[in-house]
Length: 108
Image (cartoon, rainbow, N blue to C red; front, side):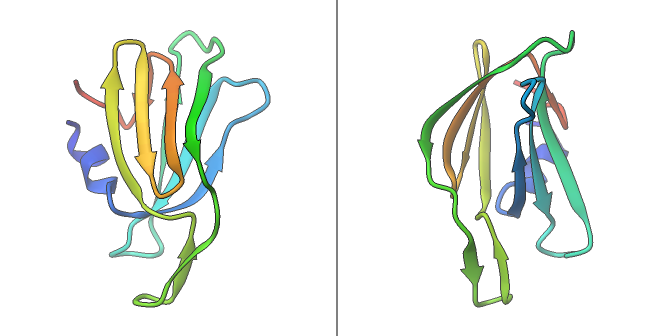
């Protein structure tokens, strides 16, 4: 597992974006230790071809964390490599994205 990607697990998601042309799926994750720092996590095809997104389970809503008095779309929990893409898990549910790359790179 890539160290950078691994450090993002457990942090809050503030944005999920899938452009109309479906060239990527992007999550913006805020580092809980430093609220001013955010990281974009992208899933895409190297050749810029369209990706396919499968919402196996989806429940997006604002979550209030009374401990640190912030709102987010929940935690970014894990990313697992599949044969033809990635399985992304979080408080939002489960999203399968069929593509060949991620940034930060996920090492199988």
